[in-house]
Image (tube, rainbow, N blue to C red; front, side, top):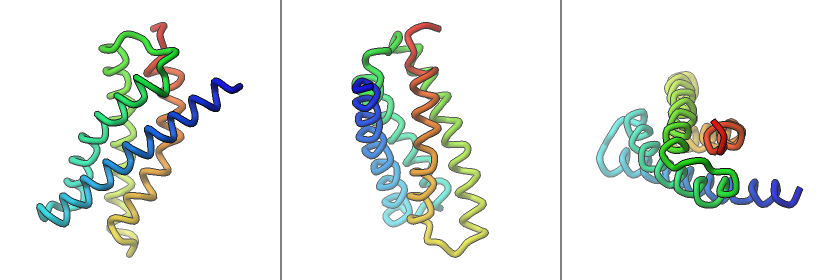
Length: 129
């Protein structure tokens, strides 16, 4: 049980670092580069993917991690699926609500964290294929 709580702690820490990276890159791309929020969201995800994978591989799922290349491919699929959901929800909600783009992105990033944990734990970083 302690092992699971430790794993959840690392997941939260890594996820927060990746989500903050995603959010900061996206917001800076909008503010400084004048990118559209949906394109800035893509840039944020690409940078945050690196933070997320490295943190989860080396800390969150270190006791169960499989080969690096296999884990990277699987986690990329998990992350890309999450990003697809993120981008669709973000596109819809940007047009359907009056919520600021930066707050909306923060809410979506938090909502997808549970899905990422479950898929990472039981598939992406699992040692056996």
